[in-house]
Image 1: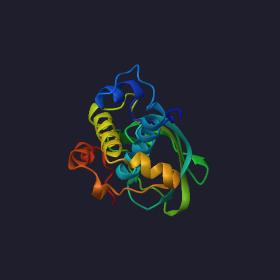
Image 2: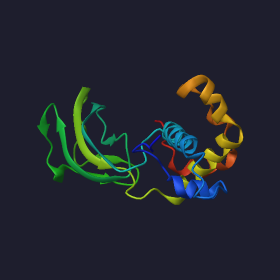
Image 3: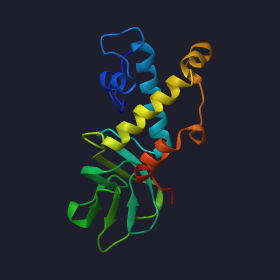
Image 4: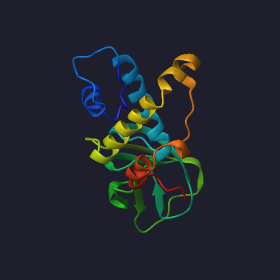
Length: 181
């Protein structure tokens, strides 16, 4: 099974972390499966995507406030913001890149339902080391708890809630978890 585009670590370094010789390929398929599962679980836990990507015409409700909270961050660049399909000049807003907040200068974002469309690039160009370590640790946890046998029996729909994760994983991810407002 190949690694998904959102994989937060790679096979070779994860095998090293698991103390598996890199020439031993007998467990590669299950490790790749667990890397994919752990990466997806981490993104759900953190309530955002980690890897840098472009988001085109992502829709938002206008709240009538000065701040627009983008779904993904850190923001690398904003290509356009539209209110009811009318482009907002880049001089009319500033970005708080690390937190994903777009601040409207001298105005509020118009109230409305799905009236704002944002095209932007966000996420990490290089995955932070603490996020990668959390992913490897979660893979190790899954691997050691024989989640592989469980997932073979029940398919890809296995469930392991974050409450069950090692606290080190949650501690490593805490600074990257999106706060809901």
